[in-house]
Image (cartoon, rainbow, N blue to C red; front, side, top):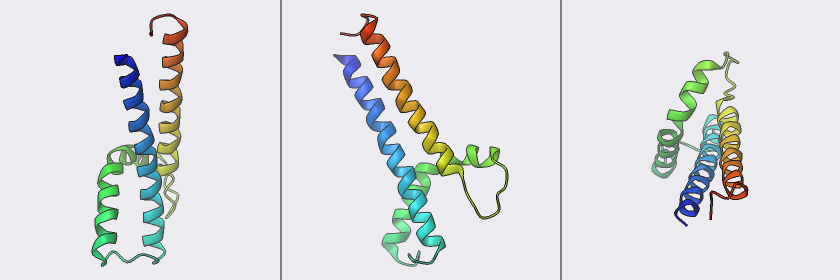
Length: 103
């Protein structure tokens, strides 16, 4: 029963982080193309929030990737890593259920 809560929280946290990275990437593109203006307080607050939430995960990936000019592939790599972590959590839960260690 407590493992249900742990696995649920892990899956929910990874899912929320996935969406945060996706929203941050879209906001960054919209700001970069001039669709959104950061002088607007709401736009600035949202972009700052998503930057602060996602940057600790994207900075190490960005440092490892080669320079592609103005193209930033770090959100794509981090999204793939988050998806892999979600699959891993589901697989661990399945192995525990099939092994009889999970009630």
